[in-house]
Amino acid sequence: MKKISLTIVSLVLLVACGKKNEEQAAPPVMPYKVVQVAPSSTTLLAEYPTTLEGVTDIDIRAKVDGYIEEIYVQEGQEVRAGQVLFKLETQTADQDAAAAKAKVTAAQVEVNRLKPLVDRNIISDVQLETAKANLAGAKSTYQGIIAKINYASIKSPVNGIVGTLPLRIGSYVSSQTAEPLTRISDISTIYAYFSVNEKQQLDIMMNGEGKSFQDKISKLPNVNLLLSNGSPYDQKGKIETFSGQANSSTGSFNVRARFPNPNRLLRSGGSGTIQIPTDLQDVILIPQNATLELQDKRIVLVTDKENKVKAIPVEVRPVPGGRYFVVDKGLNVGDKILVEGVGIVAEGTLIKPELVDNSTIMKEQESK
Image 1 (cartoon, rainbow, N blue to C red):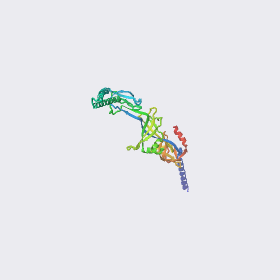
Image 2 (cartoon, rainbow, N blue to C red):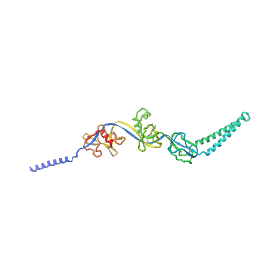
Image 3 (cartoon, one colour):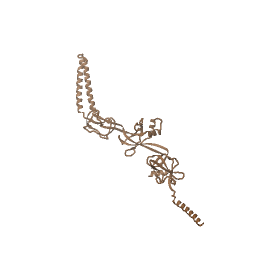
Image 4 (cartoon, rainbow, N blue to C red):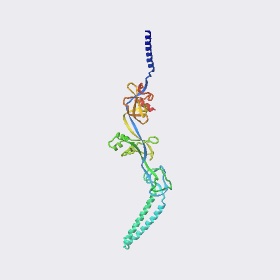
């Protein structure tokens, strides 16, 4: 009997010790901050690389053959319509013009001589008509040479800015010269050209106001321009046109936006980034640092009814500023997500959630 009693006592002690060890080994439930998902509003900025061009970009070419005798402008100079840019050598043309003018004079003398003879019926009018034809031909030749001399003074057809000057005084040019003398760009207004894919084009049009396609374009919000150095341009732009059909090779649509350029800061050939704003209402916003990127998936940690952590994949879009995501799929209003211990707390861990107000989290994000 004593042996049985000792055995029972030993078993009781072992069970008691086991429970005590289990209690000692159980990890403590740690507190972590969570926020409850609520609807919010924000503005997204879709970005597209863009190239800049003036309202008009005109290649300046010679209409006649000749050597460049004078260059009257500098690269980057602002010029007016009709201003002389280049002058070609005209020595040979001047000599041809003098000879042609002499022929005009001689032909006119012949006409003047024959006219009274015809009037008195001394000769037939055939000779006079022939003389008049010779006079007309001489005048035409002379006027052609004068036009050639005038074309030797190459003028700007528009107001604008002078581009590069690849040729120098003494260079021979003609109407067939491949490289233009320069390019004049009217940059009082700048066109920004960029491309959007079919899905993006549909999103823009389906979310836009208006009935007709053109009406929707006219009511699109103003767009922003980021310059190549990352600085925002201080003028807003307006989308004016979409191409009538998608590019068969790329599936994209060409888009043109217009920007005023009063200070001539923007130049043809420049580049930048177009930003198209989209206002969103009643969407879910979460801090970016409340998410994990795992195997090309974005993960959010939520708490269930038992306060255990569960990993949820989500689909998100970044909000400008780099602090928040708009959640398109994966979360519902009322869900509680971890904003503390993300990347440390494992899935299935029991926690003690400390509910934090959304406005507090936003202030913390903005202060960083």
